[in-house]
Amino acid sequence: MTVESSGEVSFEPVRPVRAYQRVAEQIEERILSGELPAGSRLPAERELVRQFDVGRSTIREALRVLQSSGLVRSRPGDPLGAEVLGVSPDNLSQALGRLTRSHLSGPAELVQFRMLLDAESYRLAARLHTEEDLARMTALADRMAGCADGEPHGGAQGDARGSGSGDRHGGTRGDAHAFSRADAEFHRVVAEASGNALLALCARAVHDAVVEVIEGKLAHARQAGDGADWMRRSVAHHREILAALAAGDGARAAALGRAALYESYAPQLPERDRARLRAALD
Amino acid sequence: MTVESSGEVSFEPVRPVRAYQRVAEQIEERILSGELPAGSRLPAERELVRQFDVGRSTIREALRVLQSSGLVRSRPGDPLGAEVLGVSPDNLSQALGRLTRSHLSGPAELVQFRMLLDAESYRLAARLHTEEDLARMTALADRMAGCADGEPHGGAQGDARGSGSGDRHGGTRGDAHAFSRADAEFHRVVAEASGNALLALCARAVHDAVVEVIEGKLAHARQAGDGADWMRRSVAHHREILAALAAGDGARAAALGRAALYESYAPQLPERDRARLRAALD
DNA sequence: GCCAGGCCACTGGTCAGACCAGTTGATTTT
DNA sequence: AAAATCAACTGGTCTGACCAGTGGCCTGGC
Image (tube, rainbow over all chains, first blue to last red):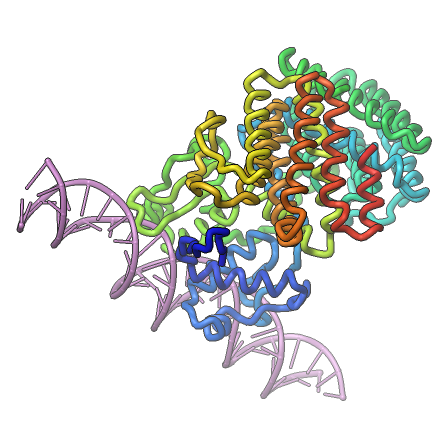
């Protein structure tokens, strides 16, 4: 379809498009366009075989592709057919998780990347946050403080828009667990307050990756002796950041956030990596 | 394996794991761990059938999953088996594109996210760039300028570490195409100069997603009348940024980069989105 | 009347075997 | 030696079969 200025017609090389691919594209198109809303059902596989006029294995490979993209889910025995899930952020997190888990980048790069994303979240959140956002952050900081001081954390305080995680670790158990959960949620609220869902999703994925890759090794060291102390310092950092956010000082919040992350993870890294991390401190 | 404090043993509900899923996980694990490096080959399908002791359709569905994650590519008739691609940002950009096209997130968020990532790339690159990086950026800016002025771009100038894309669009062809390709590579070099592979990969994914989602609509408008003019302005922006990078002024480069992106894409967005974009200008 | 239980048609998951078109490299022909 | 041929692969697709689930329907007991 491309016409040169010289008047010649250039044909693009036609590469064979697999049948399962065309099937997947057709269905994906229908889903993305909203014609197949989330919650609706696809016809049964054998019915799709009739409609697309291809073999069942082709249909199944197409469904596998859609399923691995998170657009569709199928359950054996379900007489209603595969369920349309609509577009979801899970696939993004999964892709980002693969990237972070691959050995292309080390823990230092991961932490540095989180420093950047968090800092930008703070910058935006300082401008765009609502009163409700601030209240939720404050509540979470208080919860973190409670965990740090060993209080049993009770009561449904900041449960609005809860992620529905059924946490019933009753009583005194799990200071550290509860702390890091509150910490994660704090950062999630900040990222959401930034008004950019993409940024929030990536920040969360990277946060999770950092926890998975690095936190594990640190857990013992912290819980052994200086655990409570470290938590208290972390709470202080969060409260400083919160104050900067409330004051609308995005630059200060960003700088504080970077510094807090550096202080948290730098001791675990070799000097060479630490130097690179410092380059992101600004 | 979880033991409650009360002493009871709690069993986790066992959910059936599909055979193709276990196969895919095993292979993915081998790839992510580096045991199967990029460029290596998987055994032939019929050989995998023997090794995993499952049917061929199961193997094929597993390969489809891996292929749609961008970890693997298979070509009919290839006696060497499927090729391992390693982890790549393609899948990420695909997920970003889907998310952007959906109602969960819009083009404005995508552009804003790119503004953030690019700006941070500049910040880091200003500190860490090598002379060779600068030379490559300069060469690419020159190539962009050449495209903008309609010169036939010839010669292997900055081919070091070339992505191996066989571009033999000889002569006058592809002003716009060549321009955007040079532009993409410019940003790639900057991101790589930042020293953070994770950041570079994400920046590339977001760049690709922006091109895919937004650039398409703009292509006609630009190529129609003010195409060359727009390109010349873009070249000027890139040269300004380049100068700031060379001077080590990361903050200035970041600000320039943000402004250039804003100028590029703001006209295509409704005022409401533009306001949010401006919040990221700083 | 209603509810429990069982039957049955149908689902997705898997397997086996077959055929096709394409690639490749050795073999044969020129 | 170069060119044409061939044979042994590959992945892509189709068919038909079986299995273990699932859910609606029907029936029997209350």
